[in-house]
Every structure is written in C-alpha cells, then in structure tokens.
Length: 254
Image (tube, rainbow, N blue to C red; front, side, top):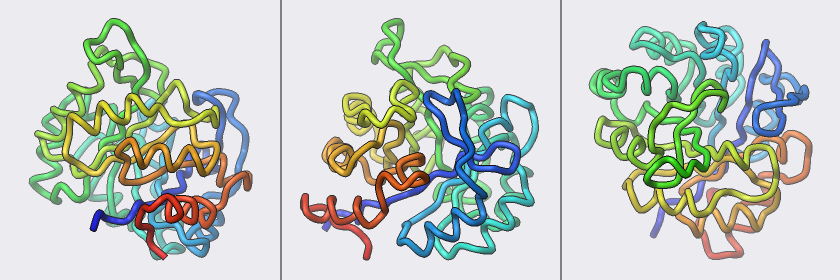
C-alpha cells in the first residue's frame, strides 16, 4: 500500500506574524503562528511547515524564539525554513524543536551544504524548498528562483531537483511561484516532471483552491499537499481535503 498522503498547513512568517499574499506580494496578516500551529495540530494536520519568508532576503537567520514557541505547542512534525545557511543553523533549529529543515537559497549558493547536512543529521532532516516558475530559456521549461521568487537562480528546476536528490535531500517541497496564492490549482505539469525525475517524497505547493485541486496533485505524483491561505481563511479544512482524497481512493491518516 502506498504511504498516506500528508496534509501540511504552511505558516509563512514575517516579523513574527503569519502572512499570505499572491505570488509573495500584497501580503496580508493571517494570525499568530503559535496559535495557528496549535489549531492545525488539533484539526488533524500531518505536519506543519514554518517558513521565515524574509530571512534570506534580509541576510539573517530564522526567528528562533517563534520556532521554539511553535514547537512547544504542536505534536506533529515541524519543518522550519528561511535563512538556513550552515550546519550550525540546522543544529540550532533542531535544538529549538524543529524536526526537519527546509533549505533553498544557501543550497543553491553552495550545493555541498546538502551533503554536509545529510552526513551529520541524516537525509530525513532535509527538505529542499524548490521555488520554480515557467521559463522558456531552461531545458525543462522551468527555472529555480530564490528570495521568495524575487530572483532567478539561473538553474533548470528539474536538473536542480535531480542534483539535490543525489546530494542527499530527503524530500522536495515544490512550490509553483506562478500559482502561489492564486487558488487556481497546482502546476500539474511541473509536478509530473519532477516526479518523473526523482524518487523522493514530493510535496505539492502553490495554487490550492479546492479539494479537487488537491486530488489532482496527488494523481500527478504528489506525496503531500501543502497549503496556506485556503486553510488560514477557512476556505478549506484539513478534514475536507482528507475526505476528498479518501473518496478518490488515496490513503490518508486519520
């Protein structure tokens, strides 16, 4: 039997508050991260992802105190990202209660960091956050971006996913920057392309607007569904998504 599809609320944190916008712009306040994490834990989330969305752009580390308070309130795995640049950063976040670390910008700048983290802490600790968008200049048709989608990394998204897998990441969080916050559906073609290229757990992100979108992502090869605004503002509940996936024949965790 295939592993259960995981449902993962995402807390995009800016200045200690959860925010959400469209394509990482026009950000609106969505609440306190600790309170939201507690509510999602109680509502049946399989994991929670905490992303400090301005840490890399501002050249600083993830807000440790908020991570620590969040970790104290939840009993499901917590993935933390934003501003992770070194082995020491990983060690500090794990000490604050994170179960997994999401890396993006620093790994692109120095891919060896992936191998170093995997060797010290194990691949299960590393989630590659791959922020990708359509780009006709890349062989696959998709390019990698950094700094919340504000900068092009000049890398082909599929080639980067493959390299990161070879270096030891444990899973890939694939975020469509074109679809992010639009609620128009996941980029299924991009999901399928990464699914064909790597044999790792794949988290679909960017574009969730309905239960049907989540089912379509699972059919395209996603092992987990990550969403933010539809959960924050009550458009969908975790129970809604799990029920829809179960009705479509996918295993979900009760």
